[in-house]
Image 1 (tube, rainbow, N blue to C red):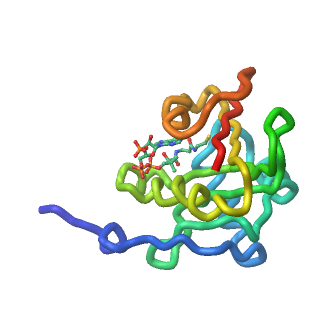
Image 2 (cartoon, rainbow, N blue to C red; image 1 turned 180 degrees about the vertical axis):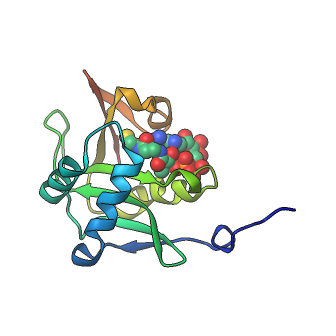
Length: 152
Ligand SMILES: CC(C)(COP(=O)(O)OP(=O)(O)OC[C@H]1O[C@@H](n2cnc3c(N)ncnc32)[C@H](O)[C@@H]1OP(=O)(O)O)[C@@H](O)C(=O)NCCC(=O)NCCS
């Protein structure tokens, strides 16, 4: 017998984040998605300090936040123009490989193309995901982390 949970048959929606209502949920997701990067306190402090919540979005299915793409209006010093920083992108493991993460990946290229000159992001090497980013971005710096960008 195959059981298909109804939420997997729904189409998720990308929605604005309400900081007061959603902040704790987003931090909880960060803890699950990036367990080896930092602990809950660090995630909480870092996101609170750096993220522009009015630029950032959540992915929702069946009323539950299952992913996010968080941004900050910051330039990267080596790049020309006005930049937007992709601070954190993620979706819960059980919802991956269905094209739902791609909705979040695509979001800034369409949404920010008339607002910013480039999108940049940092990638811890232990995440082993640079081959994914290289599909859309160029590497501008490499140390313990990669820094990548693309002009919009
Ligand atoms: C990034 C993430 C949201 C993508 O969601 P997904 O469900 O795996 O991806 P989908 O099946 O919807 O889409 C596949 C696309 O996502 C890209 N992708 C997959 N994992 C990725 C990752 N870790 N970082 C960037 N892009 C990723 C694939 O290259 C593919 O691109 P293509 O369709 O242009 O070939 C998800 O893998 C995730 O949460 N990973 C853990 C957190 C993470 O590594 N975030 C990036 C931090 S730098």
